[in-house]
Amino acid sequence: MSGYLMAWQTVEITQNKTTVQGHQRGLELEFPNKLKAADALVVNGRSMKVETWAQDERDDIVHVLLADAGVKEKSDDKPTKGASGD
Image (cartoon, rainbow, N blue to C red):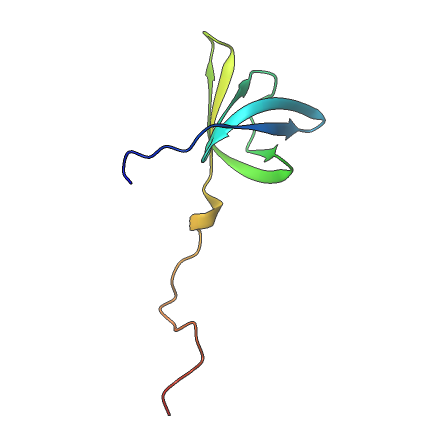
């Protein structure tokens, strides 16, 4: 479905010993500006790499785009099953 958007979920975001509550939708994160810009964050206990980090000074909110770790696999053009027709 092309117009389908996932709902925002409440998550815990941790950096060093500081934890804040924020919202996640797919790879997007939004949370209060209480953390310093970083290359990685812990989201609900899972370490995630940060693709982009932008601060909205109007609302003092940080908008983060997480790196998509699930797309790193590339095809090696080899069959996945060992069954060959004898």
